[in-house]
Length: 91
Image (tube, rainbow, N blue to C red; front, side, top):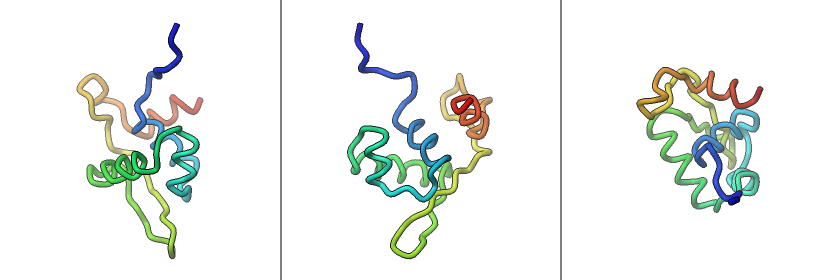
């Protein structure tokens, strides 16, 4: 049996991690999720561009604010808001 796949994408992993660690660095996110820093930057950029994440500059660091009222993107999940998605996963 392969243990290489998971039910959530790296986008979901980033959202879940940033919910608990809004001041995390790209390196910390990368280390925890197990993807490259470049991949994390791409995901953060995509999430911010589509309104799921707001990036606040805090000196040389960033702080991330999740838009909890946005809904998931896939047509099968459109009725679920980000806030509820995070609650389901964290419980």
